[in-house]
Length: 305
Image (tube, rainbow, N blue to C red; front, top):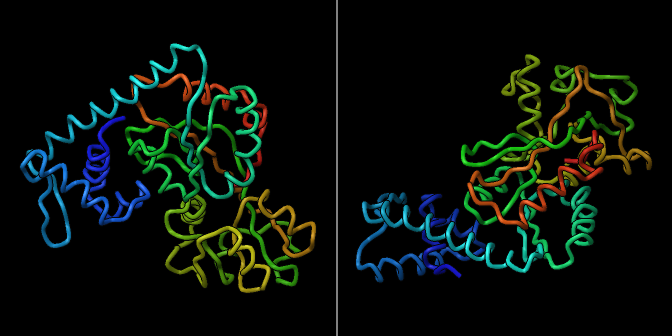
């Protein structure tokens, strides 16, 4: 309901980047630039200073951002409060999650939530943890499920379960018969990693550093942007990797991969992130309550992330 130009301006102002705003809004960069230009023409003033490929807010832009945040928050609250007069939990809820969370966990959870609240519509965005928390912080998403703690001070982080990671290798690899492996032993092998920005990558890098492994001295042979790509490269004998044990259950049964526990063990926490605001819609609160009471969340100790 809020002016689309205001929504686009708000995202650009928070990101200080037309390119990043376009990605978050699923728009082309020229379309984002056009919306901002229209708003500047409406106010007959520049909202951004543009210099050497960078942008910054003008004094008018700073003022516009303050009002835009209040207007957008009030619009969201108005729509939610009016819809709640019916007493029903209804409407769309925009959820973000990593690929593996979306594949292994959310389908069942969303199905159960839909059964309880048939008037709701879940809209799922799949990306790495960094992108998800940025979208939640910019109000593009209502809630995110990420593989690490949030780096945004305005987001609430709620830990909901644990996940254990293991080293994987091809069955013919020299480490395949081991009962466990140390971080130093993994680091000495040709190593296949997830991309920068992945929650999995951040967690594993921290694990190596905590156990005395210098990341610059690792035998890194590949950085891949998906879990399936990592598993395929490992199965081909191109190196070893560290992944969630649940994500490789099928490949282990088929004999395509071998999983070896880490010593010390590597466990991480799956977290929910959502905006830290006084008002929370009935729909979002119902979904948060549902997640906290779900047996799948409460009893889960090994989830694919």
